[in-house]
Image 1 (spheres, helix red, strand yellow):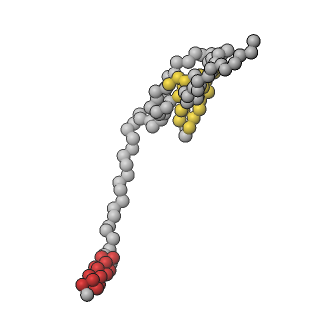
Image 2 (tube, rainbow, N blue to C red):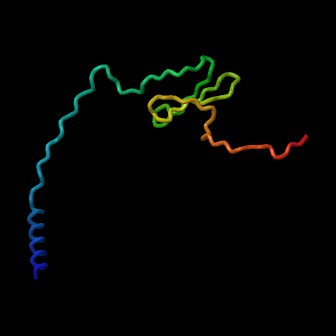
Image 3 (cartoon, rainbow, N blue to C red):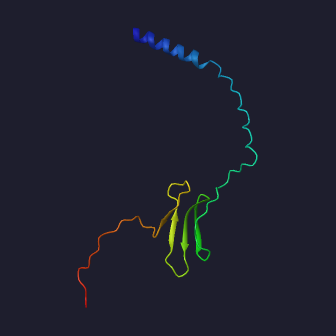
Length: 109
């Protein structure tokens, strides 16, 4: 009997609560314009490469994430921004650094 009374009271309370009008919301004010002279652009980054080096940019989402630098007559290397904060690290190859041990098993003379 108590359960029936509790269920009826719960249904009545839920019905009364559902009929309340929604709260009045006000629109947000327009955000202030950015200060003059500040442009949200990609910061200028200077990377020390020689003039005769060939530099290729690799972009992801419009942002430079890697540079391939090929010196004339030399082996190419890569400058990689791994964290996205502008700290460039040089890598001589794009492998993950895992080097399996390699020993000669047999040589032919």
